[in-house]
Structure formats: C-alpha cells, structure tokens
Length: 125
Length: 125
Image (cartoon, rainbow over all chains, first blue to last red; front, side):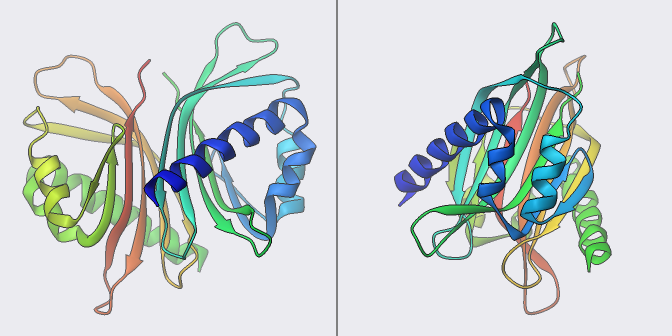
C-alpha cells in the first residue's frame, strides 16, 4: 500500500507540474467544485476559480524543478497526501524561487484522483 | 467555519512548536497509534515511534520561528490541514535552517485534535 501511495504521488507530481509549465489552463481538470487552493495566503475555492487564479498569475512561461516528494495515505480510503519542495524558474528571472506545496488527492469513481486541498508557498531565502 | 479552522490551526502551531522547543518528549501526546510522520524522507508510524524519533534527533535545544501558517478544512468532518513555513535555530548553529511542515489534525471525542499526518522538510538554500 505504501508503495502504491508513492507511485501515485510521483505520477501526480510529474503530471501536475508538466501541465503547469506547458498548459496552465488544463490544470482545471484536476480540481472539482469542492477544491480549495491556498496560494501565497490567498484562499480560492472551486475548480473554475482556481483555474482563473493559476492562469492569471503575473508570469508567463515557467519551469518547476522538484527537489523532494513525500507522500502518505490520508484518512478517507484511497486518499493521499503529497508534499513537494522544489524551485520555480520564471522566464524573465535569473534566480529560481524556492517553493513548497502540498496536495490532498481524493480518488474518483473512474479510478483517477482529484485535488481536494492545495497549499502553495514560496520559501523566501 | 473558515475562521474556526484558522483559529484551531494557529493554536495548534503555537502549542506544537512550544512543546517541541521546551519539552520534546511531551509531543507524544499529540499523536496516536495510527499517526504517520515523514521526517526528511524517513517514514515513522505510531505515537511511540514518532516520539522516539523526535526525542532522538541529533540536536538539543532549538527554537522554531514561524513565517506563515495556512489552514484548510480537510475531508473528514472537523479535520484540518495545517501548512507551516519557518526557520529552525539550533543552539550550536549560527544560521537558522528554513523548513516547511504540514499536519492533518483529526478531532477527538473529547473535543481536542490529534495529528494523523505530519510531513517535515528542511528547505536547503
């Protein structure tokens, strides 16, 4: 079970940041109306609002580099907590920004997962 | 509800790091046999094992400084996700270490909370 959690977490992280860096608008498909995002202290609820927030961020092309991925089974059967640290390189910035982020993934009836909880913070040096 | 979540999260964070910095062994009271800690990538399950891990960390007196606290309601009624960034000053080290940490708090029958999930990572500069 532990292994399966880790496999899902790694696949999710790869998928999430690939979409973020290549086609940010498509991230909406990972959220549902109940989803909550805390982005640098701002709270946003719902897939549509979260997609608008992410698409409207004041930077264009960016690239995430992942340093660590931790995962644990959560409380509801099949749900998973994913915790990521890494750095974020913006197109026009020389130095990447450190970040940490956590997700709670909830299984769907069709065998995939959606993001119920998402908390993102830059870690200023 | 949102406010109550935030109030609990802030009180928990204050309590948790106060205990960590003043009497680390007493942290065991915040965990249960089902609790999971990921500490710098190492996975530890159960209150006793977690307390042993935290008490056995290779540094004595330390002090946590909190930079940000984010909180969200989790899936099970009354449960809360708490996400912390801050820095950790060890007694013998000049420079504090940046860290980020998340907790999932589950309500107990007597009106308090225990830590079901705990993930800790240092954010190396």
